[in-house]
Length: 469
Image (cartoon, rainbow, N blue to C red; front, side, top):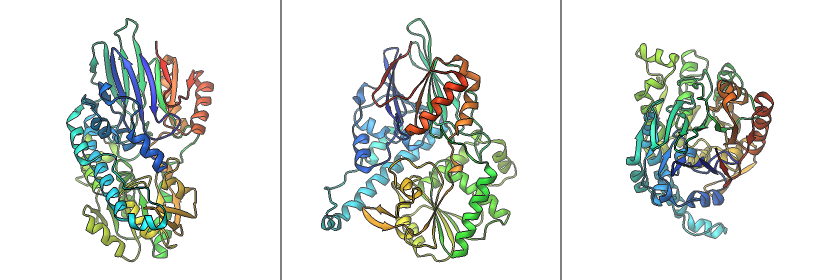
């Protein structure tokens, strides 16, 4: 078995790892890079291998930095199956279409502003979307549903199984087992590892025994605070901004984070711990994703299933309104008084959130509430780093709104949770490869793995190859 790291190696986004085994080329994830626009666009457009050479994709979960470049793979000639859990397939049905739509609309918007950009000296020619809706539509029939724990043959002598990773609905850790060369080789891939005892979904399952492990390290040097702290902090932000008569603008990942935030606001409103103000989820994708959540209660934890047992909707309450249409989204900018707008994307890189930020970020009464990890060079990262000025749709804007962070709501395990998850199978591992983390976080976690479990650890670079025997 040979393993080549391409995406999320030495960085957080763009998950993509190539496995050569049993005469086949299997891609683990095919995600979008997010960060500096020019560099990111080049990486996403230029795959590091011929797309037709890939025989199959095994997808850990639906987040766009893991699934979002599948249409580019198909556009360039990939015709094989894409295996994932039923909930992930249903999520991708909406997410890939939405990503294509947003790219088309953002390119259209930017191209309408070319004359202004040309006068300002910012123009670099027409903007082309990475892929179009037709590419996303061509990708969807290639998905194959594989439930948790059911072995799926990828080739003779090569099988994979998945386990609940507890990160988002349908997320999975994966085990590849090759027996074609006599001596079995077992390679595990964590995908993105979730946290125990969080809202909505089940806690991560214990990992299977493996010889090698590809492990995320997003929070490899950090600890999260308790959920009680998160709820209190959220209430403080809402109350503080409401007293100013301002808006709370929440860039939020449409999958998982939006549903968690809605549930927490539901609980705070029911307990009268926040004022009775309008709350909008302004994202067609988030609306559709919430419907997918409702269709997969088998992924819910016990607390969430209690809502269903009591015939309650955990994702709906009186002051909450879901917004689908663009015209209704635009009308939100004309509303006055305290309100909450939750909108995608979570890293402020595309979609309706950019329009809400553009209309709100220069007003000191408002708050921008960041609710998750922000990759290097994204607009969201610049906001939490307190840049005094940022560019939105190419225009410079002063940051006068309050910037608050609720990254404790992250769906990524911290280093203690990762160590606890790994404990049952650490004795079987010959080597761990750390990915999906900035260099400092990965280096910190590598030291922990070495000191706690005496494991051999590598932090691969893009294009680095390992032969697994």
